[in-house]
Amino acid sequence: MTTAPAEPIRFQTKAEAVYEEIRGRILRGVLPPNSTLNQDALAPELGVSVTPVREAVRRLEAEGLVQFHAHRSVVVSPLSLAELSEIYDVRLQLDPYAAAVATAKASEETLRAIERMARTQVSSDALEQATINRAFHRSIYAESGNRLLIETLDRLWERTDRYRILLVSSEVDVRQVVREHLEIVAAMQSRRSRLVAKLIRAHVTKARASIESTLD
Image (cartoon, rainbow, N blue to C red; front, side, top):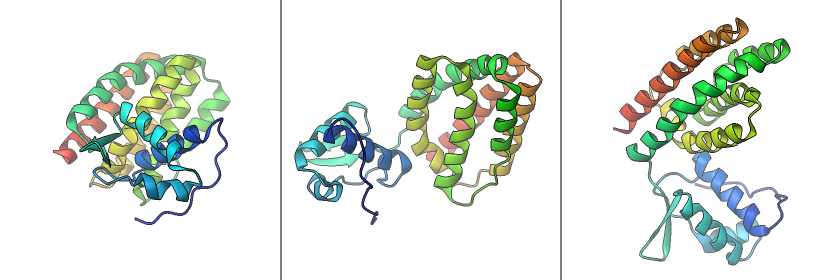
């Protein structure tokens, strides 16, 4: 797959910039599961020597996003039911809690903005639709005001993205997902924290089951 050269990225180190760029490509599906990551080719494309690329790849290996085969070739980690289960086990605890807290804290103006996000037009592009969904959910849990919780969910959702793109690409009714989003927003606007938590839990559970079915 041919990709456009990455725009210059401003980070403290070249290794950090390369890490963020490659990680983003993996999570967005630009570098799909089981594909080979050519470090020598990536270096000139990103405008760096091979050393920062190798440092970035080591970090990605530690995160489980890439694997070394025969100590030489680097492959994007495959999608797995085991990883999916671990991610969703944690999300089922944190997403409902964060949404419940957000329900009590969010301003009326913010809730109207979240409702507008829920009504965003459905996209036929899997990556774009996954991005729309991601933005909606983040707009909710970000209102919890708990920085550690937000950072943790950010990381979990980033790991979820590879799987959600697979889900959006399947026969799942995205419009039903939108209806569930609007139901969640309505409960938030009524300040019913327990109901919000219940709806989020059911929403996440349904997504998990659909992705498991697709993977299986």
